[in-house]
Length: 333
Ligand code: SAM
Ligand code: DTB
Ligand code: SF4
Image (tube, rainbow, N blue to C red; front, side, top):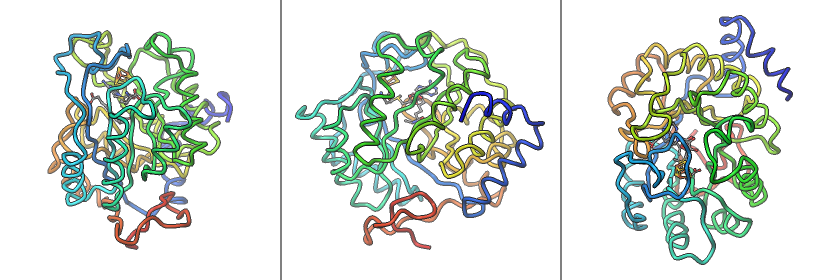
C-alpha cells in the first residue's frame, strides 16, 4: 500500500475508523479471542547497539544488570509454566546485535528452541541480526516466528539507532522469510516521531511479501538512563487510530498490543481491542520493563468478554496446512 492510501484510512473520522477496524477483525478472526504470549529475556543487558529506547544497551546507565544466557533447562522450565498459565506463544529475547552459526551461544539457543517447540506452543525468538544459515537453523529447530521490529519509519530510524541501519533490519527479515519462518515485525510509538512516520512504518510493513504474521505495536516505556527517558506519553487516540489502520490493512496479522500497557487504563485497552488488537504479552515482566499483573489481565479480559486463545495440542505436533487463524500449529478447536 502507499503512504497516501494509508493516510486516507488513518484520517477517517475516529468512530468510523474503529468500526472499520472491528469489521475487519470480525471478518478474519474468531470472535473475541486474544492470544496470550509469554516473553522471556534469555540473555539480558550488555548489548553493543545504541537503540535510544533500550535499557539493555551497554552504552546507557539504565541500571539493567548484564546477565549470561540462560540454559536450555532453565528456559524449558519457564516455558512449561507459561503453557500451564494459558500462553500459546513463547517468545525468547536476547540482547544481542545478532547471532552466528557455530557460536556455542547460538547452539544453546537452538537447543532451547528444540525443547520449547516440543511443548506445543508457538515458538518466537528475537535475537537480532541473522544471515541465511542462522535463519535456516532456527527454522529447523522449530521456530514458528522471528521477531525483528523495524521500529519506526526509514527516515526517523537513524535518529534512534546509529550502530545498524534500517536496511540491516530489512535484510534480516528477508532471511527469515526465505527460511520459511513467519515474520513478527512492528514498531514503537513515542520515539519523537510524527504520525506520518508511523504510517511510513506501516507502509513498509504492508509491502512485505509475505505479509507479517504478527505486528507488535509497542508504546515507548521510557527507561531511565536512555536518551529517550523523558519522552512524553503517546496520545491514546493516536494509538487506537494506528491499531485500527493496521487491522484494516493487514487483516490477517496478529496485532499485538505490546509494551506500554502499564500506562494504559482498562478503558484505553478496551478501545485498542475493539479497534483490532488481538494479542498481548502476558506476565508481570516484558524483557526488563513492567507489564500488568496477571490477575489484572484476567479481570480485564473477563470484563470485556474476551477469551484467551485456546491452547494448542502439542502432542499432535505442527499442522501441515496453514489454518485460517494464521497459525501452523494444531489447535483444540
Ligand atoms: N536485540 C534484538 C533486537 O533488537 O531485535 C531483540 C530484543 S529488542 C529489546 C526487541 C524489541 O523490543 C525492539 O525492537 C523494540 O521494538 C522493543 N523495545 C525495546 N525497548 C523498548 C522500550 N523501552 N519501550 C518499548 N519497546 C521497546
Ligand atoms: C516486541 O515488539 N515487544 C517485546 C517483544 N517484541 C520482544 C519487547 C518489549 C520490550 C519492552 C522493554 C523492556 O522490557 O525492556
Ligand atoms: Fe540491543 Fe535489541 Fe536493545 Fe537494540 S533493541 S540495544 S539491538 S537489545
